[in-house]
Image (cartoon, rainbow, N blue to C red):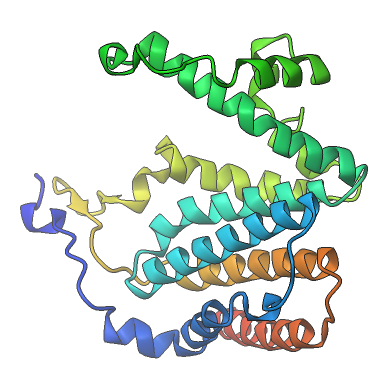
Length: 272
């Protein structure tokens, strides 16, 4: 028997009991989001490396803000999907900034036209909008696409979907990146949440009471510190890379990092 009232998840204002319990974490995260890009004021993203790094940092800030918003509403479990994206971003930007960085950033930029061409091909082949676009210039990316294809020797189908030439796992495991542990422990678990895998079922359905299925909906005091603190850690790692690429002083970042470690240790020591 399903309890119908359990199926409703109405998002109102953040629950007061969560705001009180996680006040230190929420306040710190809110301040980090507020001060997001202030340290870059006056800087010039005048190289490809800086432009791509800036793009990743901006997106990291948006992901952190979205995870924070879900967490304060008691929906941190749903925030795991965004946390996976943030980990993916962290692996990407760290991989770009190790090894032959010039070639890696160049390949990243080159693959923009590859993905645009593939998207256009998919719409034409499988979409239902041919009549609307048949008079448009569909060969606009052809020359650049062929140039990139030849430049990187793209032949097999899977070659066109890996801008780095590697899987995300191999990027994480590369020397200098050293995020294989994070990938194996965290990325796999978060993938189950993102792809609605079988191991995520019990996060939403409760069968403890015989004959009755409860839907675990609405605000929940679950995974809040785990998700938000992990997101903040990845965010600060990305921010550190930005400081290196733009050759900026570290004193403010080090201060914020120390404050973060203090809050994380306090939170996890109390929950141990």
